Length: 398
Ligand code: PMP
Image (cartoon, rainbow, N blue to C red; front, side):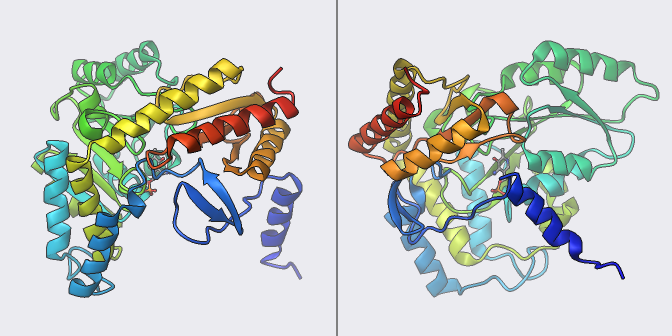
């Protein structure tokens, strides 16, 4: 008789043999500049906690106070009995921060993309996506009955060709949706959102940006990519983001018109059918917005560290690719080299993971580093020295 679950072990063993399985590492304490990873104290260079807000005293205090005042859980999905005053307050604060008519908070960024994209475009519609968009966008698109188009990464001439072809399509598409990441998470490059918005307007397409890595980083006071390019809500109709990165907590969100938000919460199944955030999460997110509004120094420090680190690594001879943000890839070639570099860095006290095929091209394996405002100047110097030492030892630098 065939073993109905035999594939579980077989597939796992195949991944393990090819060294493609995820090795889970555990933090023994907070995600901080110096973290305990599998019992070793290392400098954290791969967390998305860009501004260190997950450990900010105001953010932690807000979470603790909300547990005391509102309990540990919300008890329901948002549309039934799981909307507390805290959820509404967070949405008001976020809309104000984003200078949008309205905002809506989802459980995660992934749930936002998976829940909203298939509702914005369906049968008879077209979704056009940058080829390097995040997996949650790809899954959101897969859940839609819309036709799909792809444009080459950040290639506006190619997007224009795809849009022009779409306009000639018969029968005419009901709706066209163009989606792009704001900051691309593997290379740290920025989408030309101003040009995407211009092309979208010229072709009557709706524009959706996933700003997971731009919030807290780009724009005025870390307001994100729409602010960075000084665009209006009429030009970029859907701004999506997450509280799991620079805000330091967890949760997805969208900002845009009141019409968008009314539509989104009535139609997104991930929002309607999944339990809402516990009070601690919601209050911590609101406090994180508060910190961004009142303490601009965190964003400034993040950029100062980024400039120094990237400059030093480039001068030393490392290839940092096309990074324009605090995501700094250190491209070394073969997967085995990236893995060896990551291991040596860990021994030297720096935690940064290798990104290898199939996540990036075979010959573009890299260590992906992410800078953090909570690092001290000495920490950044420590990281640079470790990279230079490991790079020379492994003959990546000459
Ligand atoms: N979009 C992008 C571009 C991301 O990098 C991520 C997180 N990896 C997500 C969406 C999903 O966000 P969340 O962690 O809130 O589910």
